[in-house]
Structure formats: structure tokens, C-alpha cells
Image (tube, rainbow, N blue to C red):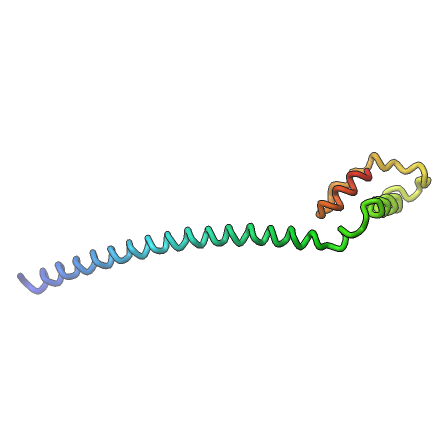
Length: 112
């Protein structure tokens, strides 16, 4: 066997070993990616839960819905119908679907 043949055979063995190691590494990376995806999903849902709980502490939730509804009516009278007589305000024709807070949406839609 000449030196060149020996080096070629040795090189092929080393290439095969490296490819085996690379496959093992790819498998480990795949497992870690799955774990990372799972943890990111769990973090996302935990953040949603936390944000919802924080929303429950919002000061707006302490205002009685009757008072909040009256605030909406007064604001709409001023912004939408500045020339309308106070008793002729058509509250039932106004859609209030833009507020982000579900409590405000609930009260606004109940007012409209």
C-alpha cells in the first residue's frame, strides 16, 4: 500500500466519523429546538395570562358601569353631535367597538 492510498483510506474514515458526529449533533439540535419551541409557547401563554390578570387591576374597572356609560354619552354629545339638543341625542345609532378594554367595550356597547 502506498502512502497516498493509506492517506485516502484514513481520510475517508475520518470523514465518515465526522459525518457521524455531525448527524448526532443535528439530532441533538433538533431535540433542543423542540424544547425551545415548547418553552417559547409556554412563555407566550404565560405572558397572555399575566397581561390579562394585570388588566383586571386597571383603575377603569373600579368605575361603576353607570358612571362610565354617562361619560361615554357626554363625550359623544360633545364630539359627534355638538349642535344636537341634549335630549335629542341618538345614542342608539352610535357604534362603540373600538376600545381595547373589554370592560369599556361592554359598557360602551350597552350604552349605544
